[in-house]
Amino acid sequence: MYILLVHAPSHQLVIVDLASSMHSCQNKKTLVGRLVQHDKLTSQRENKARRVPMSNPARGYIYLHAMQLIAQHSTSISAAECLAPLLCVEAAIALLLLLVVRALLAMASSVSVLLLLCMAAVASAQLSPTFYDTSCPNALSTIKSAVTAAVKKENRMGASLLRLHFHDCFVQGCDASVLLDSGGEQGAIPNAGSLRGFNVIANIKAQVEAICKQTVSCADILAVAARDSVVALGGPSWTVPLGRRDSTSGSAALANSDLPPPFFNLSDLIGSFSNKGFSATEMVALSGAHTIGQAQCLNFRDHIYNDTNINAGFASSLKANCPRPTGNGDGNLAPLDTSTPYTFDNAYYSNLLSQKGLLHSDQELFNGGSTDNTVRNFASNKAAFSSAFAAAMVKMANLSPLTGSQGQIRLTCSKVN
Ligand code: HEM
Image (cartoon, rainbow, N blue to C red; front, side, top):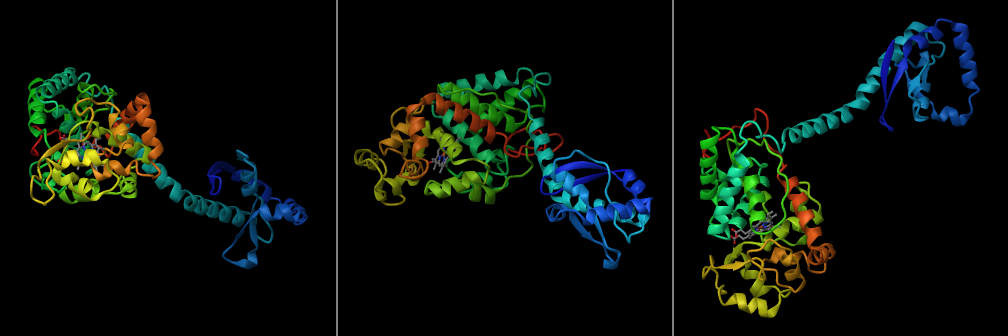
């Protein structure tokens, strides 16, 4: 009889041949002989052996030499010895029970971790760049030409579509919850009066529905449109794994808690992204999205009037269009990247080096803290930024997708079916 034994500290699995253990127990003399031998073991070896007390102490102990062998990285164990005065059969049964219980206990935590890992692997394994290759082969080209046309019509739209994807993924995963006009997510503080591009997504969805009925999810359209927007503005490209499905609800509360506001300091920002599994370097790379797009005065007013880590000339040029009193010109816009607002490049980081970050949170990335060197690196090395940004975007687009039979493929992105 073979049983599986788990050695908790080393997480090794070994097979114990109980049959040979029972066999050795059938001969009490052999057993006693072994006991004598065992008593002569050096104290060093004795310490290594695991003593397992039986329920009745008078019955002695089973010395699990198996454990010793496992510790020595053995892959198989020929015998587990039994000690008198235990009866051989009882000892074998007890040994079996003990080992099974111990194995179960030892495995309990690792099994759950393994299960989680497997589930995560399955979830991301279901996303695939070729997901629509047979079900809707023209989906990606349809999205790309619609995005290119929208960005050509209005440069800023590329930034707005990129931000939509970010605000989707950080709130209960990339499930197009941000597109639902019921449920309140669009009315959350980071989104209300600020998110744009819903009509462009609705238009793309209509075009895609016309060629493939209820096949391509709104969440996938967001992910592809974000990539195509960056490309349309001269930025890097990447392959988008596909197969996300759409949620049937959104969450204003999660939008308020999980999306970072512009008044966050560096440790807040690192914490906010680390909650989603991103390193500080990945957070800095993703923030490079602010190399395109615009922000409203209400989001940078405090920075230009109250912060000291801002270039004086830059601050005064912004003040003209963003009056100090709250409520005046709140919606007036300024580019997040003052030097090349419509080009997806690494100028955002060079701006930070000269204290020309528009948002308080932007300048926090280069303010004498732990991310200064990353900013310097991305400012001087465009290729390093491009590849870090692309990799982080793929990672972001992988946040908790609904797959398989979860959620639905919405017919209209703004409402559940
Ligand atoms: C690091 C934390 C971040 C903070 C605090 C932040 C905050 C903001 C704020 C306040 C605005 C201006 C909104 C307005 O005034 O209406 C904005 C715009 C924008 N954000 Fe972020 N953001 C962050 C990260 C990101 C990330 C990770 C992305 C994308 C990967 C992104 C993409 C954008 C884009 C493209 C715009 C311009 C949108 C437009 O012009 O329509 N942001 N962000």
